[in-house]
Length: 273
Ligand code: HEM
Image (cartoon, rainbow, N blue to C red; front, side, top):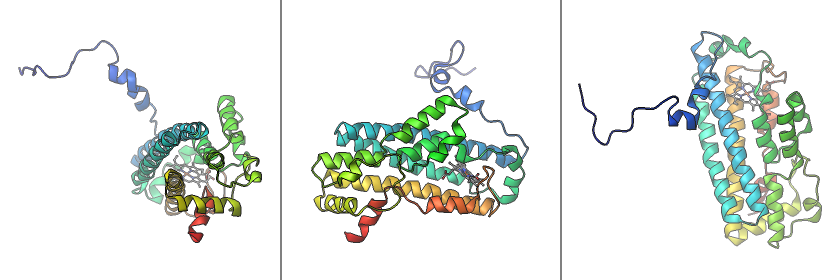
């Protein structure tokens, strides 16, 4: 019989170990229920769950960033946004898990999904609302879940991270146009605003912490577009132009969203720097 070193960890616990209690890993692992024998179905379920957890973390960081911008605490807002970028990098790399899935393998379990589609993901929707990509129609799928719907409605009605940023820039003396500051924050901001593009041009001349804010927001926007684009190409490879399980035109619908970046003025300003 081997003896344990004096510095070996504790090995005796009654009931769930402290690790399992803290991380709830037993609950987590009990959430994987493939409905076919196709091995890639497990990969698909786990990849989706991993991405959901990332959406949750991003919501948490963006809410903190908005709160800190509102409190004029730029260092903490920047720290939260930088954590968003790291989280997005990890989120995007999760697509690797599905890079090995073929159209035929997906077809073998697609019917398990029924009408389930990522476009019913309430955490992704909250993430989009926090980033300012607002669309009232996207609240509808969640009316049957009142707590979820209320949370989404609150995010829909509230200023996005971009609105909070422009308010801070205005408080710091930059010439953010009044109509922008008093705009209906439930509107999706799709077209660049000449006055806001000029504000960003001025921010880029300063080379200070506001310039870092501009670049960090751009990094967040870039990664959000990257997630959408990699999703689009994965769908193109696996599903082709067939309609989605959520009833959309599939590829065409995803392409439109991939082509519409968030924080559009920050993209526009590049041309005048
Ligand atoms: C085999 C892989 C996948 C295929 C073929 C696929 C297909 C689609 C399609 C066709 C749509 C458009 C809506 C519809 O009609 O269903 C969609 C939307 C969406 N999917 Fe996927 N998807 C895949 C993997 C994933 C994964 C792993 C996630 C992670 C959560 C995900 C999240 C989403 C989200 C959030 C939307 C809504 C996008 C938006 O509102 O702009 N998808 N997907």
